[in-house]
Amino acid sequence: MQLTDLDVLRQANVWFEQHKSFWMCTIIGTYGSAPRPIGSIFITDGNQRVGSISGGCLEDAFVEMLERGEFEPHDQIFVYGKHLDDTNVVKELPCGGTIRLLVEPILQNTDNRQHLQQWLAKAEAKKPCQRIIDLSSKTSHKQLIELANETAQVISETETTISLTYGQVWSLLLLGVGQVTQHVAELGIMAGYDVRLCDMRKELADSWTFTKDKGGVDIEWRSPDEFIEQYANERSAVLALAHDPRIDDVGLMTVFETKAFYIGAMGSSRTSDKRQERLQRICGFSDKEFERLHAPIGLPIGSKTPVEIAIAIMADIIRVRNGKPR
Image (cartoon, rainbow, N blue to C red; front, top):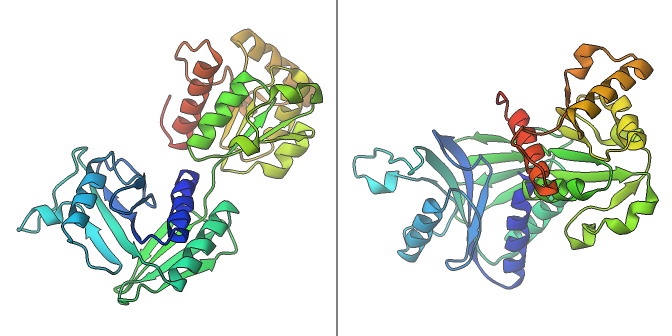
């Protein structure tokens, strides 16, 4: 599950507490240019809609089918397009892909309440878990199993069950408070990343307004090297954004020893060259190690303002994460 789908789960629990029944759709298979990844969730009570399984066309079609009573009141598989053609040929979405969905009516009962509450708790705590849905049961039997280790999202099926494994979380580790940092944090959270921030300059505390109680992230007042040692892994992007060697250099001295998939540092080409010379002189880093460093950071889109720079940074992180060439 992407963290962007947390809002969908939260709303599902709100609707349940409001004694509403609703429908949940989960993408379990895609072909071609499907706009949303496997595992994406969409819920609707027939009127309100939360989440997404396409660019809008499939959500509209699904609600129309609900209004016509075309879905049975139990868990089922639905392939978008098959319902449009008597010859059993699957029609494509306007984008050119097809989508296979797990469709679940979430009715008011104790089992569904416990399942939704436990699933949300595991997702918010970022604990890997597996949902098992018994399609042979008209009473909508579901299980939630906590897993010992993080794992990539996996869909597995038998003739009667579907298992959906959720575990992989991508993170942004930000070094240094500032305007660019705030915009990167905002964009990162919207994009589904787990965002963390550290700094040692407590005199800047009042300048950070994007705090956790406002939907943002609180500052961890600690040394960047300890911060990176605790949190960095192969799913982390580490960004040195302080524009202050006391913060950026200390973090970069540590980050090359991690498996972070993205390492970036803000600054001009001249600043970046001076930083590389300084770190190579102090730490003995090789040119090959510095090939992992994206500096100047971000895609070269001519960005000037803090928000433009943040957009360029996030775009480059997404590019690297998806294995696309620059």
